[in-house]
Length: 604
Image (cartoon, rainbow, N blue to C red; front, side, top):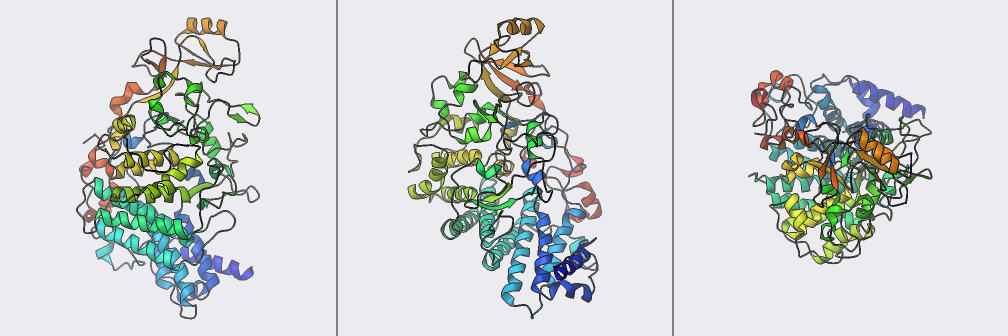
């Protein structure tokens, strides 16, 4: 233990204050770390700082998702509110972690340590370098490729141009393949917090799918084709499916509510510990209407969850006018595992959506919260947060093959079919679909006519909701326009009257337009402890609106539709602008198209 503390102390000294062009550390400092396997192991722990924290990952989809309505609009999709002047992601602090990784790779050369040991840790370093650059390319496109700790004299790199997306992504793929081949860890027996070789393959499938479909749908004419990247995604996912021993866990909900995540499916997670005082605020963020963004699902997305027999919900007669209770019946079980639903309880008490607070549209997420309430107003959550899991790998494999036109009925059954069977769906799991769901196509993907690709996209959205994939999925599919859709919510049978939305015999909520309407409704209610929500029939109102549903009596809740014209998405938003500070320091970086000279997100 004393020896290990010495190694950690040396690592801390090596890492303190490092910048991309900082002079090298003394040989004595380096030898304390790089001359033994224990030193390499201690140093490698610092790589994990590149992963998001539990607090950040738990709320990664509290904004910038098309399926959610938030308290306010995000700056990136709010017209004229984002430019190079308030952009981020290019500070020296953003790049110093890369130098940390490169410094390790450059110095992990001691021949006294067996080559397999050195390559294991170099593989781990290269995995994290790929993780770093994947985020940078997704955000900015072309970026400088740096694969060694820079010397101050290397001005051609420090003040040079950006390298091409083609070059950088090829390097990312090389790093991931080296990592997959050389990382010796194959399992993490407790909480899946350590990177294994299977994680490298799984992440490679994610990266390759993103790059392949981005090149395809954005018509990028680069040396490496979209199909090559899609085949890479297929191959990497296949290795995991065939060799890792991973499988789908029986309980979808348990994946997101367990302190020790189910290892059958979990590949990499962010763990916490009550004993060590390492906790996060996921419950607080997803139950407070003020601490988080108050994200509610919108009804158009809720309508994409299938019925249990595998048919679209929108095939159901009268689906437009089903209330809260009715629309949750006989549906994909992931709907109940993602949203507060009729009959949901917390600590033995009925816990409907908080209609007068968080649940302004009626659909309150609970996928990333536990049923215990202790963390609702403080950072007391200890459940693990997923980063990489087997379910995603199945989706990556299915989509990569479908985009290549090679997906078979057997592939479908082993991937999409398996995911749907876990969700209690009984129909359509053995063979590919042959009929287009018009609702899904018309609302979400009007340019897609292949029912297989449409259904894989549906499955991906449902299975991975709130896990951090949707923004990138929409960008790679070139469907950013979905961020401009109106935010409409659940159907209610009427206003100025008590409503028993969960059909348990007790009134739950009154949506009222004025004091007289509230008084009249309260006189009819059979429950005095119900939610009271002020609404307006005025489409320009700043409060929750109610829009006539079309059946002559009912309404759909709506939010922020009076500001729909402020929502924006333009071609340049598929990449972020390079921050102006970085351009001032190095004008040769050049700005991404459309963002030059302080141009804002104006829709162009």
